[in-house]
Length: 312
Image 1: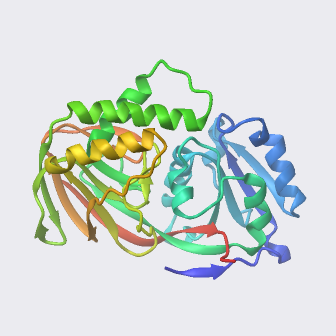
Image 2 (image 1 turned 180 degrees about the vertical axis):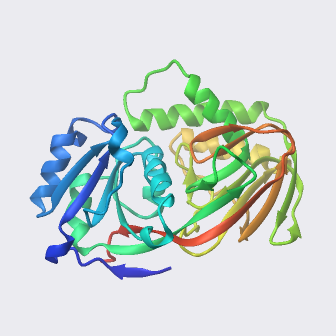
């Protein structure tokens, strides 16, 4: 893990490119308010909305990018960064988490208050972040949070089709946990052929997640010790024999209780995996694949630079 002090106080480090999802957050997170907060800290601000076509034109007339939105917005920006030449990928990225789950920001220990984050940019540090490289899938060649099979692709399908309207992100997380509980009760384990760093770990599971973050979906912490800058991925597996215990874990979370569930986890650099099913997910995107299609994944260490709070 590489941490370097960001010297933003210097004159040449005063221009921030704000890439904003205007549908995320509330009134305190609108365009004018965010620009006002950024400029109040002495930075120039160049604004782009993710709802406009030109936001993807990431030029070099700024010193760092501020991503204002949820996990999906972070992925969109990272996708554009990864298209750049290798010498141009070291742009510092700051996060203003305005989404529902904000799993990536929480993994990095970034607070959820935009004003507090912006005020701390001058003393932030740079953390080098890994990504997961995916082979054999045309729709996506990387993941920032996780890639997986089993119950989560089904949860994502249900949540996308939902008719309920939630009053707050907290209510939406609760709703997702309840849906997840229903799915697990009905879901039958599937055969999974799994090779991790040339060692066979095949079996039958209700979930197989290759993690780069601590949590996924409705803030479900699957890999509490995971560090997205340590050069390794975390493979989380839930076999059939742990299904009832996992159901209890979700029930406790719905009730607002913490349950210490010991997930079966393995560290990995290279993974070959195939699943007895056709649905998978890459971050927040659902994929429809051929059944038992072999997927290859590997860690790509230190590809991105994120600004994180300095330790007090």
